[in-house]
Length: 346
Image 1 (cartoon, rainbow, N blue to C red):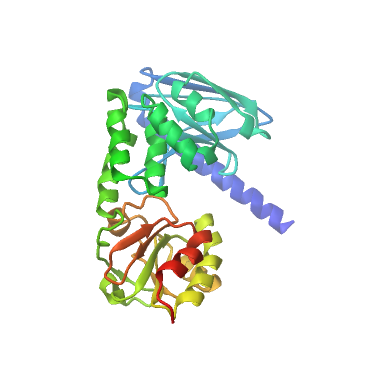
Image 2: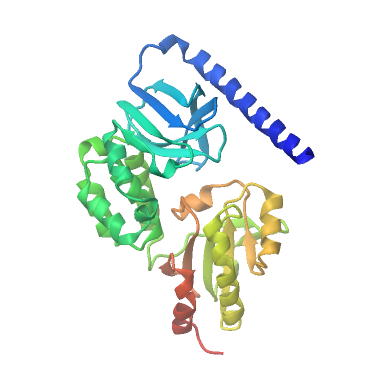
């Protein structure tokens, strides 16, 4: 009973905060309330009255930005506003549990669905979202499907969005990246995703295979400053990760196995976390038995991750004893095979 009361109190507090945000945002925008470029009208069966929140992910700091909020009545709600360029947004329905991801652009967008079947939601009225919805989320992060999207749909902002993550995940040739960038239409080149894609491309060129790894100075878990040069003379796997990243946590047992297997063959791991919460970071290090050097500025996405062109985790970089990048973004399932080939025997 106490737990149920706590749940209700938490929900009521969450709804209160969202109502406050709704009133605040509406009051700030009241002077332009009639100048709408997009309208989102949603009809969600089974949805309780409450608050719908419109949000997006900021590409600079990878944090969620609340754009707007509105009331839900009888499963229906409306958002009105204006957007400079198409951009992936999320609607949260009464909590962070129920989400609708979609590409927003200046048009009349209609959303119809069932609260219990949001994966089958129907969205019409957005050209960009129609393409986005024709692929699965897994397709976006899969090499062949990603390549298809990047090359085939050069007139879609969604394609630049896909390229932004494909460039990070896979070792695409620099000249191929340049071809993809040059091939986008002028309309796409005006957007935020393209701007960040170009900046990412410049960062990736700095950390391409055969390039020297950029130096850094980062505190370890004890507060001691550790430099990349401290590991010179060893093969080093720099592992960018975070305690809140599920794929990172899933990779940790395999990383630990490889560390123990090869630590006596001139190999080590350096974990660089993009965490902000020190307690959560330290607890995860202990829980996952991460016994190598663990470093973090505890600033989230910062100058070091930017230096390495890391905008999503996990990512890794394998360095030779001279600090030259010899491979990157190695699938941990193939790490043992890779290390057995390049590391000297005992």
